[in-house]
Amino acid sequence: MAREAYITGVGQSEVGVRLTRHPLLLTLDAAKEAIAEAGLTFGQIDGVFSFPGKVNGYLAFSPVGTDEVIEALGIKSKWQMGGMEQPAQLSAIGMAAWAVKQGICRHVLCFRTVYEAGGMADPATYMPPRPDTVSGASQWTSPFWATSAACWTAQYAARHVHKYGLTREQLGQIAINGSKNAMLNPRARAITKAELTLDTYMSARMISTPLCLYDCDRFSDASTVVIVSAGDALDEIKCEPIRIAAMSGSVDRYSWDQVEWPAAYDAGRDLWQHTDYTIDDVDTVQFYDGFAYLPITWLEGLGFCEKGEGGRFIEGGTRIARNGELPLNTAGGQLGAGRLHGFGFAHEAVTQLRGNAGERQIPGDPKVAVATSGGGPLAAALLLAKD
Image (tube, rainbow, N blue to C red):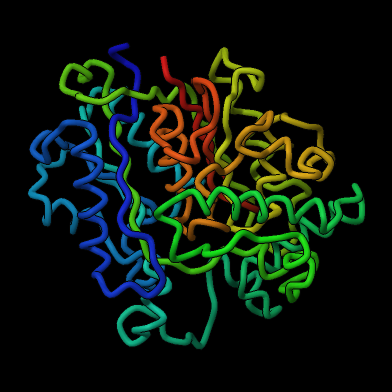
């Protein structure tokens, strides 16, 4: 146990659209909730990790850095990290787990703060200037007017349509399931106000075939915080710890000459190499759904169904419902509860494993969950267990 890593506190700020509360204050709101749940003080925090750190060129995407959190909360940190060059959002929690397993830190605060809706309301402060040139990953997409990730995600989804028979009625079950669950999530009220029906989904305008409006998450403002603690520091914790039983990640090429399979397939396969748990042990999955197609890549990549069978696996929606065989995105996911950019899935997995999800709590006594983040060339996964 001493060399294990545990999630000991989770917190989340108000989730809204064009909130007027400063993003740093949203981060502090979430941090205070997580610290209170863990039964710690900020004086006990000795590490701060984030994804992707403060992005000065596009503050709406990531407006708060680790140094600002350290300063605002009076934290004395032994290690901090915030950067884009990680497998995906949840890799920040994975790096925190490594830090406590190595004995560098005892309690690490991990956070992800987004302000993309609020940033649109104040473009002079938060939105990036229009560049004259493109570089980095955007050099492969912007020249083709593929400025939205919907464009390249749709290419992967279109292959499933043409090669494996994925239908829009099947794909729609991801968004419909997220909507149903979001209606039971008090923090999702600013995002989902009415349950989505298949008729409404099918009549929505297309964004990039086969993805329609309801297949895409929407900009929101919020912060999510996860506290990661060392196994030999659990005597300082007042809540039920959730063990990070395994983690995996994968990074592939960004170039327009796309690889055959998204990174979720490699990360999904590798997750099971680091644990004795199998898919049969998993009680709930919280899969990144920035676009409705992405959970299908995780279902297939992790082995819950064969490649190409994801559409048939979710057909009708009963298998992935809260009372189904594999409850999916029980807080609503990003489609139903806001674009929290990955961290919301770890938050919900812990909440479900502790039995604290209220009306949206899945039946029984869940003990194992998978949370993921990323799509396309980036992927990260966490296997969480209630020992």
